[in-house]
Image 1 (cartoon, one colour):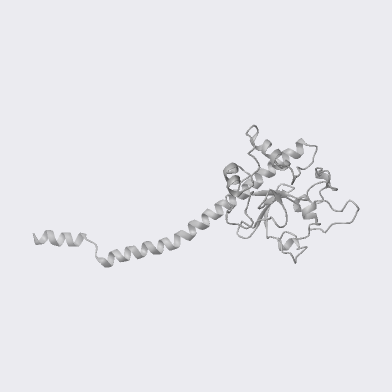
Image 2 (cartoon, rainbow, N blue to C red):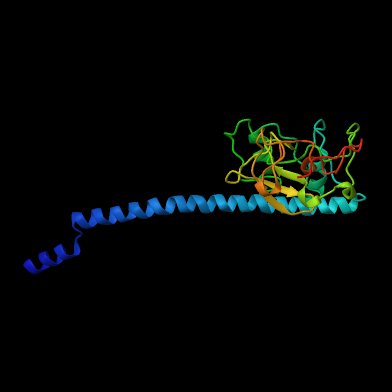
Length: 237
């Protein structure tokens, strides 16, 4: 009998051992939880970048099918031409959801499509009603009526933004969303994707090395063309 009691004692954990195990688990959790959060955030950023690349492929198909002209945005059209046309190319006969006017509507209608990024946040101000926006100025000027911009007139396709992270369906300097660890993911006219810092009002024309969206709307970054219709050169980004 004493032998059995001694054996049971050897199999039991002491209070110190239990506290040690709990402490180790707590330390591991403190280390792993932030790592898991970072991995998930990086995965969402990667998804956002990949979606933009696919939108770039759809835009190239559109250009090839439309006499080498780019899509246009139409602030006053309920389905926004650029989104409707790229949707048709990407999803063929799948019906395009109605234009979303709230965060909840957009997430409901566009989740699991390349038009949605998991980096959207309902708590943003102003409320996000879209994942990506089309460059508001990338069209043929004068802009009334709205005309598509021929690709041949884009002075530097690799440095002219087409689509980017935006709180609305139109990409504007004030709608650009730095969702990606402080950066705005941007699809350029030539099809490559890069990330840039958001605009700063007192930095009208940042250098390319600064990797920042220019605040100046009359720059080649936004307008694409090298000069106004009057011949006045635009600021090169």
